[in-house]
Length: 166
Image 1 (cartoon, rainbow, N blue to C red):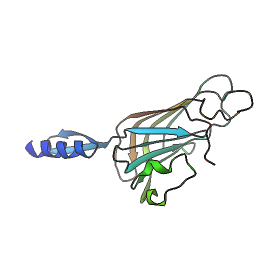
Image 2 (image 1 turned 45 degrees about the vertical axis):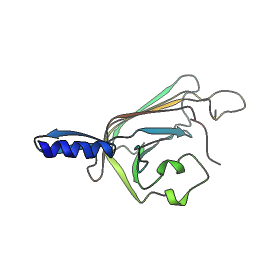
Image 3 (image 1 turned 30 degrees about the horizontal axis):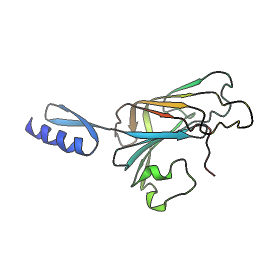
């Protein structure tokens, strides 16, 4: 069991939650920060900003009167969930000032898991996109990448739904 404790310590420093089963370590990637924009894109990254999960749904036609909740069980063609690896990944989300040094070095699709997206209705009036005034929430549970990588559950909230780069 000592080897498991060493692995747990190393994993904790790397931003990974581990649980030992016998003498083997099972790990989940922990996403610590994130945000959202558009209608709707959400993202979450590790503390080292070297792994990210992005979620894209088309919710422009959501209710104008009440919050909209969209629930998906992956795989589902109505939602795109992608896992990215690279350096400084969060610098290129929801911006039009792309940093080429932060481009993903590896991309994978999520093959399993549950995704819930909740979006407030867009405001009426002249700012129909509601940039900066519309809230949204992403909840991810049981996300598994194509290569078997698993992710700890995460909730991301944003007040930038309706904001578009450009």
